[in-house]
Image 1 (cartoon, each protein chain N blue to C red):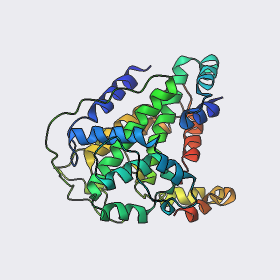
Image 2: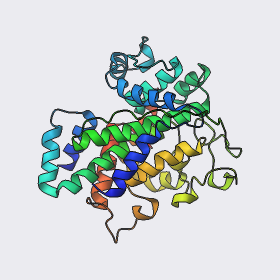
Image 3: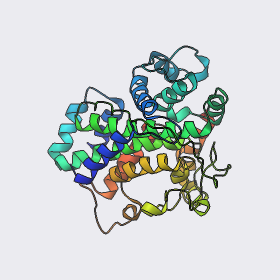
Image 4: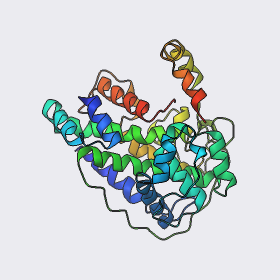
Length: 81
Length: 236
């Protein structure tokens, strides 16, 4: 339900009202507001990261090497054009 | 809504109309308006769907008189952030937008995006743009900024001078790469991070799993963050 809310907010989907109501019904109004704040904050900070060319810190890269390889995330860099 | 969130949203939004380091207040509000326009731009939509964004030429659907490299920067940062590249950034700079002006523009776009996305999420209408205040940008670049980490020079915590604002120390920021991303324009960095930490979590709360700081739990927060990063194709 939170993921559906995130998807609808980012995509501006017609389902947004229903997704928002589902979060309010399940977790309450305050949780919906804080969830919207997290979604909005990361909608922005992803642009800061991708718009500045910063690399992943070496210690984070080392700590996540296994699962990044397993999920194929490293291949995403090759698609940057 | 938490009072601190309400307050910080107001401060950040009104701050878009204040004189910046590299842009005037009216130029900053124009950047925010352009960030909204980009969501309905036909060229941006076509480029987003294209195999290679640079395959398509054309004009952005603009609502302002911002110069072309600024228009291109705002529209691409809004519409297709996951495929921005250093080559694209170099093109923008060589077209006449300075590195410092680009960084402040990035901060303004990020703040406008954060506030507009939040309002959309909670079911509120978009806010009226803030009034632009008069003033002349200082055009001050931090002396300690050095190239090498990202596409533009950045100011590391150990290189912050006495003449610089306390961009890391003021909020206990550790100086991770994402903290440094906007540091070429310290005040622009602080304006964004003051808002972001209120929406997400401040540094000290991120790994304090003994306490919940929001009405959603740490695990729910991180799940939402990861989902948005995927939707925006953010590799960092």
